[in-house]
Image (spheres, helix red, strand yellow):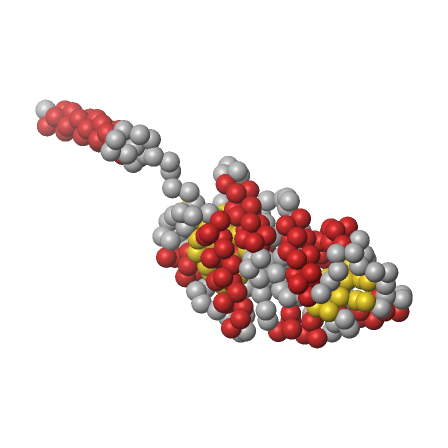
Length: 289
């Protein structure tokens, strides 16, 4: 009798546990749905993912002020969007600290980097994986037509003419990377800029990759180009941007900085990832313009 009652009691306990579990699920789902409804009965829009702009970091204080200025432009173009900054190294806040402050919120990470490379493929996803944030990493900013517009504007500010004379050419100066896909992106960007300017554009690098900026200038001069400009393909001032500008035999443009096209491109990459909500977390999608 005792055994029978024990089995009966256990059966009731299992039944009650199952019922409680079901009720908890129903309550949770109901609460989730109610959170999307305002007090007047209208359906609320779910909170969009936070935008985290990921800068490399620099010892040059001008870099940090430039990046902060760019984020102000991004916020001005998209009022109401939560926009945060995180650095890979050298500057605060570091990316991991920024992401930890977001808790378990969804976030889209937009690298403030101009081509594919180790930072975009490895560093940023690995740093995101150390936190609870549901993070997705957008592609690098370049190549993209909006960067062409920013480069062209910076060259005009430096003295470039809308209708350049014969003998004009441009060296597109970047930091450099060992990743072969970075050179593919640079070649594409040089081609886009060449089409826009109507003159030869040669990609070159401050370090790591070849040709160097001085070597590219020398090669163009040897081919008869006597008005060689340096187009600074850097997001902000820093040592490499300064060294590349010093190699200019004619004129050198300023870094892309806070140009409106840069802010628009950051938001474009964010919007691309919004359209890829079904993609797995922290994956690198195919590069798209």
